[in-house]
Length: 207
Ligand code: URA
Ligand code: SF4
Image (cartoon, rainbow, N blue to C red; front, side, top):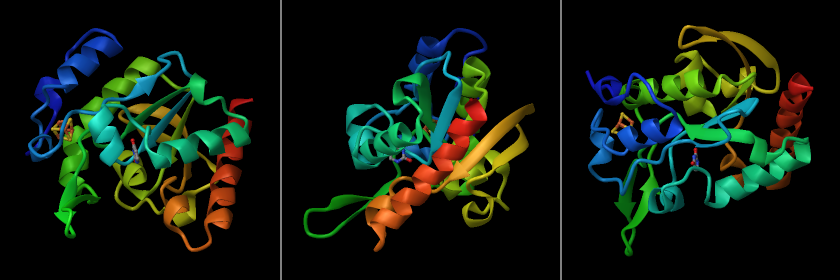
């Protein structure tokens, strides 16, 4: 089976993890992507946010949530009363998965498979063990399935404080939509306000 497990160092901090993840060959996604996009932020953060996978901009820059979805997320966090500087942000899958299409062969995001999410899980487990957040914010269906299992439904489980066991530890979780959903939707403002409302539940759980 695909797995990152043999690449994850048994000890060391964020820099050791990031360095080792740069050479991960745990699944085929490293072949087409530019680089591993590891998590980033304050390892003492009270809240850890989990997205799906890096997007085009993240793949180029090597940092999570630096493209349009990241800017929208930062705005929503601030509006909900969570300082983006005091968070740790990462993704369920650390390499960009895409197909090329159209005349310019633009890189179009493709959802990771369950096998790829499972393969990449040991990196997320290592980040959770390092940061030990008080609260995990799950951004969208992929992150939800990766952390809470394949029966996770964002429409049913969003916007409430969940008590779950994640990678063998009890965890408090608030799920919401993926921020890029608020970039694409017909009713963008309403979808954005829904994201902010869910993040306010997270903010309250931290106070
Ligand atoms: N979308 C994600 O899920 N993660 C990123 O890092 C950027 C966009
Ligand atoms: Fe390793 Fe995850 Fe990249 Fe696959 S997606 S190669 S498991 S870091």
